[in-house]
Image 1 (spheres, rainbow, N blue to C red):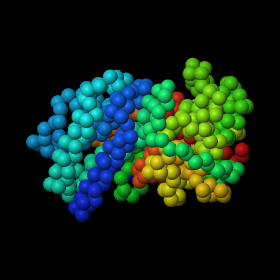
Image 2 (spheres, rainbow, N blue to C red):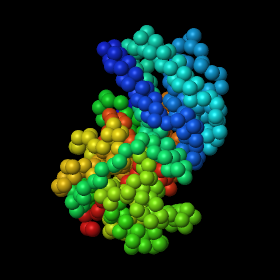
Image 3 (spheres, rainbow, N blue to C red):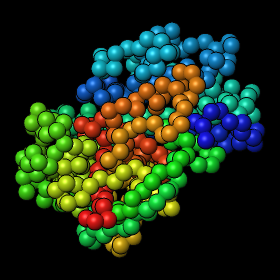
Image 4 (spheres, helix red, strand yellow):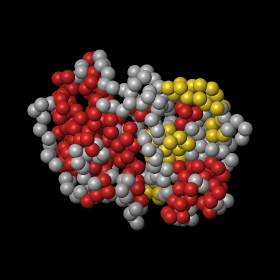
Length: 426
C-alpha cells in the first residue's frame, strides 16, 4: 500500500464535509475565547507558538494548498501573511523565524480572526462549486486534521505560556475533582509472531501511518494502565534523578544541564501542579504527565520494565474501542477513568501521549505526499521518538490506533506520560 494520495470521494459526502469544516474551524476559535488578546501574543519558548499564530497558520494552510491552486481569481487577505504564517514548508517559500513569532504584535488578534473568516468564505464557496472533486475533498480533510493538531497545540502552548507568569493565571478556572486510586498494575500479553501494522482501509490517515506492513513481535506484556503521580514520586524519592545508571546518556546530560528533579509543572516541594485551571494540589492518583522520553525510560528501568515498541502498542490498541478522556471533557488533565478498577486494558486513548521505545522512522516502502505537502511528516523522520494514543487535549475523533505522534526525546511541554512493557523473561 502506497502513501495516501488524493482519492476520489462520492459527491454525497460534500454536505458532511461542509458541516465538518464549519465545526472544526469554529472549535479552534472557541479554544481562544477564554484568552485576552494579550495572552494570544506571548511565546514562552521556541517550541511554543502564540495562540493567534495557530489561528493564522491553520488558515494559511487552506489558503496556500487549496484556495490559491483552485480559485484563479482568489485574492489573498494580506500579501505578507504568506511569509508570516508559513511554518516549515520551504518549497512554498521563505518564512518568519519560528523563535520570533512572539514578536508579532501585529497583525492583531482581531485582524487574524478576520483573515480566518475571509478564508472560510472562499473555501465554502469552493466546496459549493467543486465539492464532488475527490482530490479537493482529500486536501480539505488533510487541512482539517492539520487544524485539529493545532487545536491540541493551542492548549499545550498556552499552558506553558501561563505557567511562566508569576500570577499563575488559569486558562479556565475549574476545581478538579480528585481521582480515585487505581488498582495495582497488571500486564496483558502482547502477541508474538508476524502482525500487520499501519493504517488500513479507506478512512483518512496521515502519510506517516503507511504503508501497512508486517512486523515481527517477540511477545512480552503491556501494562494495563498509565503510571500515576504517586508511582513516579516513588522513583523520585528513591533518588531516581540522581542515579546515572538509570539514564540514557543524553538523558543524564539533560538532567544535569536542566536541573530536572521532577516532571514539568510540579512545584519544588511536589505538592502543587500547574494546570490549565491554574495551580492545583498534586493528585497522587492522576497519571503522571509532562515527562520527557528520557524520564519515561529511566522510570521504566527503575521499575524493572521497559517502554513498549510502537508495533506492540498498536497490536494491542487495534482491537480496542477508541474511547477515553479527550479534549471535550474540558478537564485538560489526565484522569483515571471509573472503569480502571479491573485487569482489562485501560487508557490506550486519551489522557496522556505514551512514549514508545521506537524511533520515528519511515515504514518499509514509505512514500510522502507529492509536492510541498510531502514536507508535512517525512522530513522529520530523524532524531525523534514515537508517541501513541492521544491525550486529554486531543480532539475527539482525531485519534486512531495507527496514529503516530513524534517529538524530540527531551520534550516535556506536551501531555506525555508512561505505560510500561515487559519482556517474556522479565
